[in-house]
Image 1: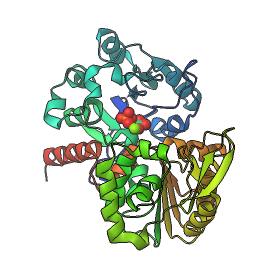
Image 2: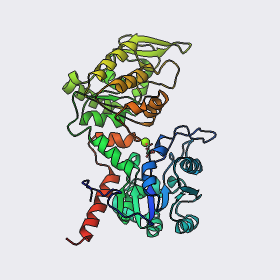
Image 3: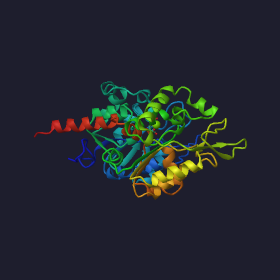
Image 4: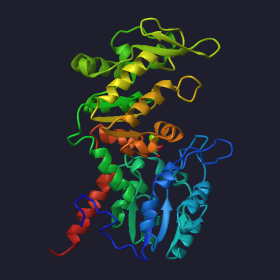
Length: 401
Ligand code: 3PG
Ligand code: MG
């Protein structure tokens, strides 16, 4: 058995077994054509698929969530998978209904059947406790059809949902290769990292980043900390921060405690009336929201990254999709790529940009996860991994000593 607390593909017999393979191939899609814009997450599961070449594989993933433009079926994913693995890939327009169950029963050795978007089932959209997940219709309908469950969805391991936790509790279960690789690389950041350690935390979701800062300390969703340290911010940025009072209070107390370990911008970039970039020192904001860190800040942050033993980045540093406002995100990513330290990036935006820049291979680890990586860095355990650990304990208890 492997040295992990959970089982891996080295510990289980897979040949000719009927396997439910949970992956996260939730990818950016063109909103109107539903064409796949970035296939990083699809390519990332190829090692696991290759390992399961002589099994009967039924693959399940979600795509986006209800209400969003890219909440759609998995047909494009099945086609993309067929291009990247050597197996025959089939698709069924159903998840747990009679049509899906009939097709699952007929999957042959060497075939991969892709189920439709798991979140088309209402139960899959609700986080719940493991006992309740075990009793879902989802788990009751699917679990009797499989010999083994493999969870390779690291990017969804922070969700306590039927396909992540319920099936893992109901079936003999092990981690896939991507899950194993991601957990190893991201956990390494918490266990004796090479210092100094720099966290570059950008992006829009402040609420996900504060717990990381609380847990480890490092970079900062800048506007929140500028506000918390009583710096002048633009009226529109003030509006953006309305409703985040609890986080501002937390940021204030983190600042009081760890001032010397938190870097905030010296300047910010705004769009002028024609949308052209103009940089302003932080004491002279414009009315509009800032769209990027300023050039002095870019220089300062790049230096900090160059001197770091470990750098972790999650979330862009500005609205990099807009012409002229990608400078901060690009240059800090490039400084990381040049660094000799241990470098990890995560989150769809950063990873996509690194691949567009052609520098993605220069990072020590490129995570397929955004939220799951942040949960782990916040010191939280991941429900998907906890369930895999329970599955390993069940298996150990069944074996005679
Ligand atoms: C993601 O991209 O964040 C993962 O696929 C998980 O999706 P979710 O955040 O909608 O649960
Ligand atoms: Mg998410």
